[in-house]
Length: 184
Image 1 (cartoon, rainbow, N blue to C red):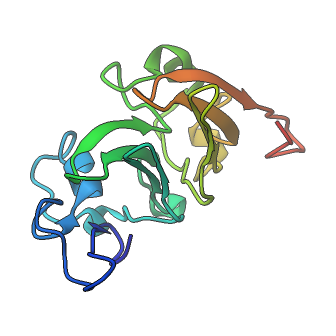
Image 2: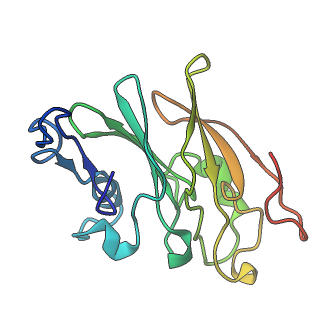
């Protein structure tokens, strides 16, 4: 991962791009995901989306997280990418924006008010091959808390997503007035 929002595949011996991965060895996976909601966007970085943690590679899939939450961006993304082709297999928005996003049924009602921002991913994921789970630490919600009343799932949480589909298995969050993020 480099250049903010691209994944690169290089031949380990020659350092040359691998032609079958993305476009000449470069895959714009964040842009591919962001365009599903904002089709006219030409660069993911223009909305503040970029990689903020090292990717994890397991069983032919690259798992990577994105966003910088202080940019009024609607959620971070967990993205699973085919390691051979650079194609996005699935993605999970840490702050579901509507019923089209996975987890909306759980998280949607926990956001009351106009702002649904934050939820950046700052740490590398952990993988449990036995359980088939990807563990994701999700950052805080952003902005004036009077504009986002509620528990604001899935921010300030530890998510467990299935490796194969990104389905939410569980999340743990503790929201108290004096404690923004507790051990989960």
